[in-house]
Length: 198
Image 1: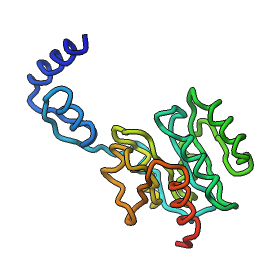
Image 2: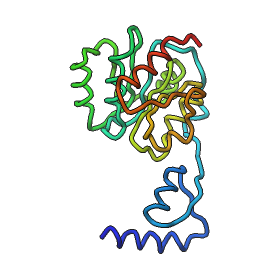
Image 3: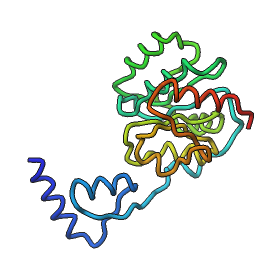
Image 4: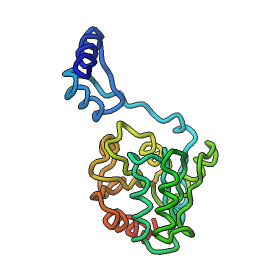
């Protein structure tokens, strides 16, 4: 069945005058699985015109669905390696919320990690503006508005070496930090950001 779907994809996409994807990561997948070349066409976040820089606050921000593939649990675990008073605020909802709540309790981070749930746009704009940095380390992300939104707010992005499309934008030590897939390593980079005053 999978090969039939691939064959149909190749046939139909082959009839297109042009094939575009949302990122180089997605284009690479289309070539690898379907043999179809394409061009990345990066589009801005709908939130882009509203985002603005603000002071570097006392919290890191995580934005996105609370699903295992987004690896919010990694960000939470990393906070065990970040000195107080730095906090982690998590904006988003999803099926893994209960697992994240359990992890926060296991690590004794209830006073430093908050699951905010779904937030409205004005609140999200304020959260981006006041963050010290944005933690976004999903597994093999297609594209990820979060990266672009963080940059619009002039905040560094802390990500992982296998985060896919995020790595098309984040340059280690320039506009963010790229960590090995390890809570202690990620926490070390967050602690470094926490020590910076600008």
